[in-house]
Length: 166
Ligand SMILES: Cc1cc2nc3c(=O)[nH]c(=O)nc-3n(C[C@H](O)[C@H](O)[C@H](O)COP(=O)(O)O)c2cc1C
Image (cartoon, rainbow, N blue to C red; front, top):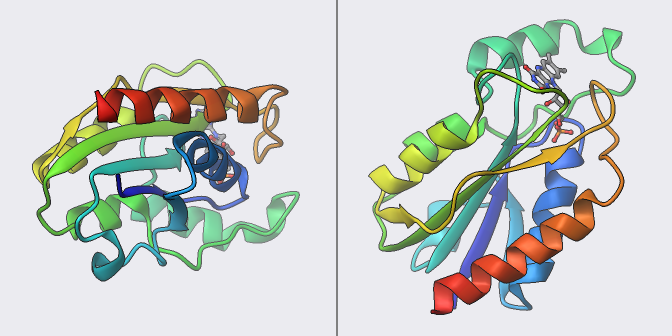
């Protein structure tokens, strides 16, 4: 089974969760940033798991990324804006045939979420939802991840792999 875990991550928390999910899926799964997951690499994927941070109650927009870029110096660590927004990546995802799953990292309870938009984008490209969206928690505005979240991510990856093979 070809599995790709693709992520947008400004401070590394979503990237760490993506790597743990890929470990849980198994040795054939790769965790890649939106810059690395180019169409030639994604082509033929049986499973795409996509994740992003929750910013301002939703999947990051270009507007919020621009605000973060302008205020970069005000954060505890510099944001990495070198890879495209997952929203942009999903818009450009070539049609495929497989299953999709979505996750988000977030700090608080929120009236909205990011996984619904991600699952819709994956579905539109031909990756039918395999599971409900998954949330992983961070302890501060830019991280770190809460204790136990990487273990939860590995376990979720293993469950996704079993469901995809079933
Ligand atoms: C500008 C900004 C807006 C945020 N908005 C929310 C929010 O609406 N809800 C929430 O739970 N967390 C929010 N957070 C926390 C992020 O979800 C958290 O920083 C995220 O897990 C970082 O992931 P990353 O390290 O992969 O970039 C916000 C953080 C920033 C910097």
